[in-house]
Image (cartoon, rainbow, N blue to C red):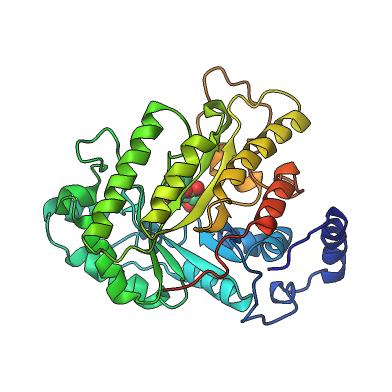
Length: 374
Ligand code: G3I
């Protein structure tokens, strides 16, 4: 991944590249076919993307190619996007994203196989009608992993399985109801069978702050990881989403570092999978708001990137323009001025202070020397 190590070289690239590139096809953005790109050692930098947005916006595509070594489909590889109906497969967008990544030598994170919220209604109905019938999951995994198994280096096999309020710490998802708590282990074995070379991951949120709910969530997640490792489940790592929120701060090393260490001590890698910042209230001038976001991310990365097991950092989008946070309800006391400014680029695709914070933190991080597939 080409990192702009100085502001000047970056800005030169930003302002010169589009002029030079003009209407150049995206495939030229990296100097043509670039199937085997050597990547600097240390954690990768990635972003959640949508292929329709990349294809519609050459400047977004340039930012993706400039900054990312890994892509995560924000929508296109979810069950409800891939198979909205029993025989209705919509693989075009995911195929397009995989082809784009392959053309430019980028890794792809598969997001996500099992997630309650992205399970299509027809599949939920079947799971509720015939609990215990694993065939619907087996068939889905066989098709999706058969199609993308070799193109995807890491799969979020189960997304957001934790509910710290539940007696067993597991969210009462349609899968948990249909198969019981062992669905997670079954899903990991099923994924391993169809994608033997991919890294298999459990991905969840709410592990970042010093408050009772997130204490319980960290404890529930660690219990689940220990159970899975004890049972020999084929689990390679975890994804911590890191949807940060200024109103929940401050971030504390004495809270976060032991959590990362406990995960690493289980022999699991850690991917930061959905970093962004909710600047609830959105009050103050843009410069002050951007400074707060950058300082908060700096505090998080100072802790997280100290952990050698952290393999990579993915932001949940690149530009505020596309952030899911624009659609989120605001705190009643919020007095929003414009869009939430929690991603590396603003709505006009200009880099903000947090862009430099992330670039310099990732560039300086040791981390694992390569993103080893299994
Ligand atoms: O594309 C359709 C559009 O045709 C239709 O008119 C519109 C009507 O609502 O819906 C559009 O699809 C929406 C899709 O985003 C694309 O914008 C879905 O309704 C909406 O539910 C979906 O939201 C996504 C959400 O996951 C559910 O898949 C968000 O963009 C995405 O950022 C969010 O990402 C999740 C991660 O996967 C897991 N971790 C939390 C994170 C934030 O919720």
